[in-house]
Length: 288
Ligand code: SAM
Image (cartoon, rainbow, N blue to C red; front, side):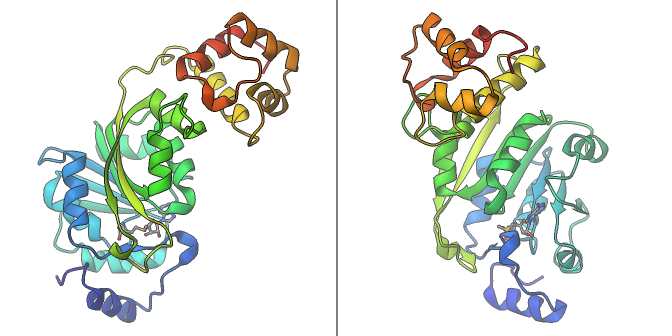
């Protein structure tokens, strides 16, 4: 099989299968041969690993995953890629391609059916749905040991930003609640065809076995409703944004902030994850 990181191979496959890249699906395929091995190293893959890949594209990363891991399941939304993947993955008996939209797929059921045990999630994610996919992967409580993902560099920095720091966004709180993030390496735009307009980076999220509210799913859901609402309106104070987003009286939020000794005009990114958890606990049940 010719190398998928050669542009001439990609062009030939496009021509043979009458395939044209879809910008709408975030199709930027890797052509830098150094990236996939580094991503696999970062994910800590070995011969016993089972891997769920999202968005195999032409199968460049999939081939590297298949060469290192025990089994790979690759979930691809674009049905036009299935015949291409049949060809590019023909030499690998340990890969199954599943057609489906990651946002519409029951990932727990897929993993249970295909592997029955823990997985590592690896992907060069389509950037247009990075946050929803990462949130889904985290919230669905997959039996995953780590998620090693290529994303837009800015998104990677946002995910890794410590809650309570200026760079933090709603996703930083979810990432730190469910996982321990580590920025692994940067990837230049020229590593893809076509090159995206932004820089990329690989981030590894080591999934926590026991997030703090794991045994209280209702409180956990409330915590993230609160976080999302607090970050829902840029440049507003936490009290104003959360009040508007949740339909909770400002006085209730202000009172809870006061009880916890938090500044009344605090912006959401000024609170640590622990402070957000305390605030959720302070707000009466049934308020939102
Ligand atoms: N893994 C390939 C590579 O690195 O060369 C392709 C990565 S490309 C950035 C993203 C891939 O995700 C494309 O193959 C695209 O069709 C697929 N994709 C886009 N939206 C998706 C979705 N909702 N569910 C599953 N796959 C999706």
